[in-house]
Length: 189
Image (cartoon, rainbow, N blue to C red; front, side, top):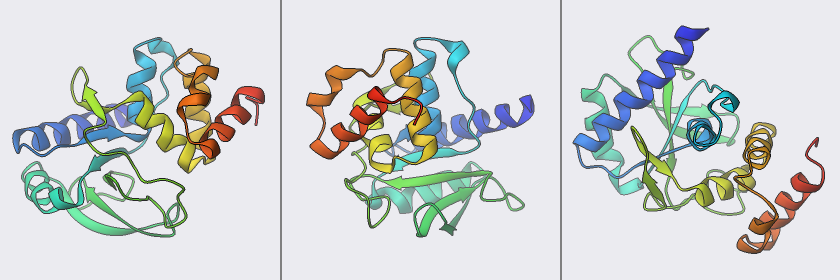
């Protein structure tokens, strides 16, 4: 199990380095972003994740294909049960599965056709210890927009550690605020 967690981390760092060296703006999102924010408060509360989600601009995708290929990643457009369509992904080598991949979220675009709001831009980020990280507000909006079971779990982690609280309700669009209010009032749901 420990090796699988290390492989995800190595994949993330290798991709971040390739994008940075090529001057391609990006931000880490998804479970790795949650882990990075959580670790700032309590490293023992960090959950593992099996994949790497990266935020890129559509007009940087071609340059990212070249940069990530040089780092050993193979571009594929794969089916995504979660989005009901296809996503851009970079497999970690020729024998890798979709689980061993970088999943690309396109900045400023809706992840699914029925998503309430688009993903943030890559500029809605900050420099982390080893990679560029989506801002906490961008991450919370993304998690509230998707609102799948794992997103609610991630949000509960942020709430438990005091990174998100009732003060956020006024900073969010009404529907996202309602979702957050539901979690704050009934964290077990």
